[in-house]
Amino acid sequence: MTRLVLHYVHEFKDRHGKVRRYFRRPGFKRVPLPGLPGSDEFMAAYQAALSGEAAPRLEVGASRTKPGSVSALIARFYRSAQFAGLAKSTQATYRGIFERFRADHGDKRVALLGRDHIRRILETKAGTPAAANNWLRMVRLLLDFAIEEGMRSDNPARTVKGIRHTTDGHAPWSADQIAAFRDHHPLGTRARLAMELLYGTALRRSDAVRVGRQMVHGGVVRIRQQKTGEIVEVPVLPELQAAIDALPNDHLTFLITSAGRPFTPAGFGNWFHDMCTAAGIGEGYSAHGLRKAAATRLADAGCTDHQIMAWGGWQSIKEVQRYTKAANRKKLALSAAEKLETGTGNGKP
Picture 1 (cartoon, rainbow, N blue to C red):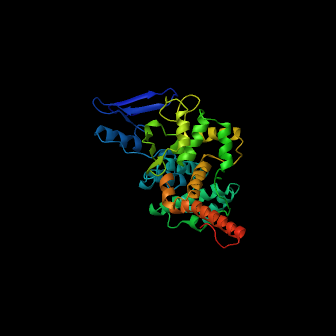
Picture 2 (picture 1 turned 180 degrees about the vertical axis):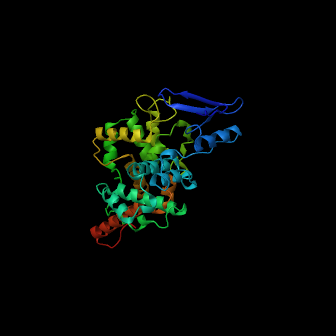
Picture 3 (picture 1 turned 60 degrees about the vertical axis):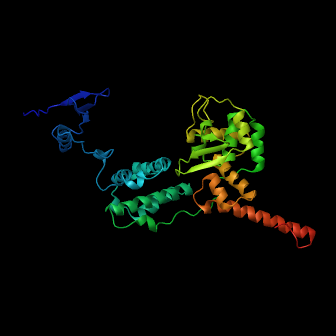
């Protein structure tokens, strides 16, 4: 039996007992050699390493991915310029949805994925309509990419209707709830600082957990938003400044865990939920609800749409018009009530 002899190949077993092979040549970077010696995959990597070229880059899990499958499409999308151009937080959201889709349907052929298949999968998610419609939106995007890649000629997900439901999203906090939180969590507590930071700046939790004294200059918080990449500059209101001054200046971020480390956005969300529960705020009210409450306060104070956009870093004017419209309706209703009371037809504009 002929033995294949290759120079510079180093073979060993790792701690799990798996055989690993590397190209190790003095003066050159160590290169992993995939597959079995003699296979096309192995020999291509070996020849590339021998000539000093970079080994051909393989997709993660390529050896386990069937060509033309949903899994192959997802792997290809991860390598696209479209995915690379997304914010890191958005990439993480996409991956969470795509990986669950891959786990359940990754071995199915993209070309055979039909409208009825997509509709039936969507119906299994009907218990959480918002998440179901978000999944449908991601599948539409993925199949649009499949058309660009020549993996199919149409997008059947575009003809599937989402699940109808009405929701106002995260509920904005009321003035009474904010007062109750302040009563339960006095100045000098991290919970109070967290609430004042969210309410005073209208930052998303992914940005709030990164704020520290090094980002505060001249009474203004300056931070680049993680989601959009845009820089926002927000004045530090007196309530927030009092909460900052009530705690020691010994960490890079204002908000830290019990172990003295910065929060992750998800970890902060869970912790802040517990703080809300302790204060009796009620279910359904979250950190994002304080962002909405901040926008409502600005609108009630007479701020314009563009002023609110600048304060909270919103990208679209439609996102803030709901707050200014509600504030204007409130003012008009109060003016109408005054006219009824005085019977003069005059009221505040």
